[in-house]
Image: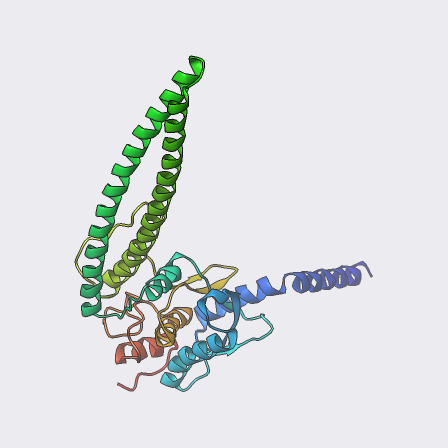
Length: 315
């Protein structure tokens, strides 16, 4: 009898553990299956974090994700991904808005268009040099005006202290000081306006630097990275990343210029979710630089997928 109760208790305990830790257990099982039995079952996915500031709806985003998944599925005529609308997918796809997309949007707002070409890079570099020169000129003028303002303000305050310590000022001195105070107030407002303009120029230059550095990486240009002005952000970033551990699998998308670019970045990251590594062929979707440029799978991509899925190669 005790043995029966022990078995029943064990079964109940296991059932309770499965109930409360089902998502974690499913994730662990999925990771093991993906590692040891790749492509045996479709990877379930759901939308995780989703920021509306990208200007794309969830439905539109899902259509683009589907475009990326179909690219891989058609290559071997096999269902590799399944969308779970209830959020239970083991793979979470996140759309995360930060400095990366903000920089892209800021350039659009000031009329600068970007494409992943050397010509676009050269054009942006010329704009950067012009904006940098203009900024340095304005900054020098601003700093000179600040020094002059501080000298005038110090002289004004010195006179005010003198008259306060010596019984007050005569009417002509009082009127002169009052006029100087009004003039200083006007100058202070002008300086604040100049500071605002300078801050906006800094933001525009930093946005340009971020995009320039992306092009340096995606086009594999042998130049030093451009430096931002007074910003903690380094100007380097990836448009998307895939990360996996024992309890989670996620794709994070940070930046895209258009729907086509988004589809290509998602296709690359979905490849990582399948277990594919980077390739050295610069035309491959899985090229080591995730630059969102390559539109179609190359033979190298297909061979890597077939090898991963343990399918015979037709080549």
